Image (cartoon, rainbow, N blue to C red):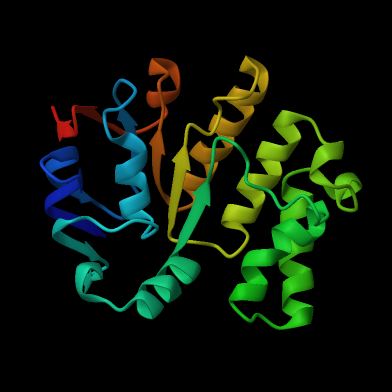
Length: 219
């Protein structure tokens, strides 16, 4: 599903290159659940952003379902991202002015899905996440755990083939964290490919493969 070849990411000032990722070679099969671990500053979030087509590498090749992402126009990349990838952020990234229902509906609007179909898809997800009663509330009226649940609901409502999660349980208590990880496990069992960044050995164990990063390299 994913093939990264000789990926480098760096920032330059006048005299110096600072490498965030170096010589990353990585294959991810459809249906895998990968946990990416490593200390702060190891390049984990940057790797996730490159996989999610939010950021571009300076060098190297990225193939997604055999599409050469490194050669695609911004428009094609955006389109691929919209239709194939769900992103779960540690800090929720919900839109404050929108209700729970509207937040979850947003990716479907981007995909120009018809009104009646959108309604059915959102209703299904609200039900699945047990947040039907919260659908008219705004993010600031929810607890951290509820906001993260809505963030995940939004990420998967359009049935992405790849789910990327950056420290998805970082702000949650242990019970909420366990709930989220069980949910990921179920999504993965249903066929969604997942790549999560985590500091927690316990959360990493939910994956079927652990990738360790140190100083921007796979170790």
